[in-house]
Length: 279
Image: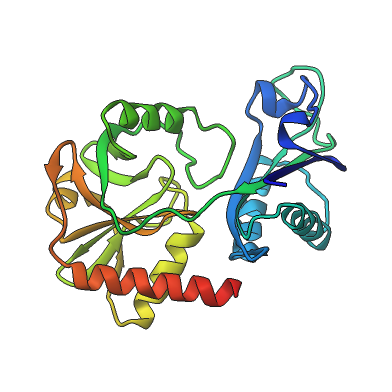
């Protein structure tokens, strides 16, 4: 199969799964999710994704009591049923099913949705085009919730401008992209916004920071401005499927391209680590 889904014990093609209309994720976006790479049927950085999932669940007071081992087994089985060796694995947990009411029953039984599909890794050789968009998101961007409308609108705005990345900025300060973290290189230093409530601390982001440290590249977790981004030696985006791609243009203005050697070094280090982790 090219894709397979799972919902509360039922395996089926994703388009055939039946989800109750009264699932709180449907009418409130009341849930959390994770997405990760699977190569050779091996999930990449699974434990880090599960740690982040638990952080989001706890903050939203979603009482998901399934043991981690059980969840691992379900995820592994979904991946096993997809023939492709290169997959995207997605799973979400909503608060449960019940009458529409803003307040919730703390004892509600959460719903688990999982699907995996063939998905190649993104190209990192071709620089991306990006655009700045106002950051209109809520103040808990550190939680990976299924409330993604601001990111959807930002991504569409980028697409309408012929760009593949939307960079959020607020009062002249850059945070991250609509679905990726953002780094800049300047004078041999790697810089990225701090992992506070204003960004989603990506698993790929965290790994790149560790690899940079191993390579002796100084890392600063400090917010930077629109002006800093435009003057960067290199701008780098990271996400589950994007392993250190560069940005070469923002709003039709050329950026980066001034430290290709260090950029390539970081890209090579990440892909080497990735390959070693997934065999």
